[in-house]
Length: 107
Image 1: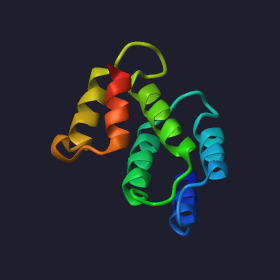
Image 2: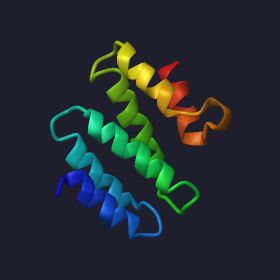
Image 3: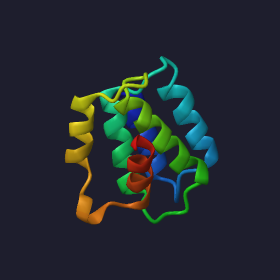
């Protein structure tokens, strides 16, 4: 079972994403200094699964920062292929607050 599956199974049993769970995700996902394709997908799945729940404010900050890093491929230059992925992943008509924060951070 992958690390992401373990996190997802554990998180889905809880009422919301706690600050401790965010810290664990940060440690696990950023251990190699970058967000992988599967980790980016996982973060979107979690966001969608936990929308409207009692999540720690650290969750939104981590989600935006992690995906910003993913879209910039760990540097300051926006990766166009990953930007296309993001455009396909979000629904402009129904963009939620976290997605809006990410879009604002991208500029």
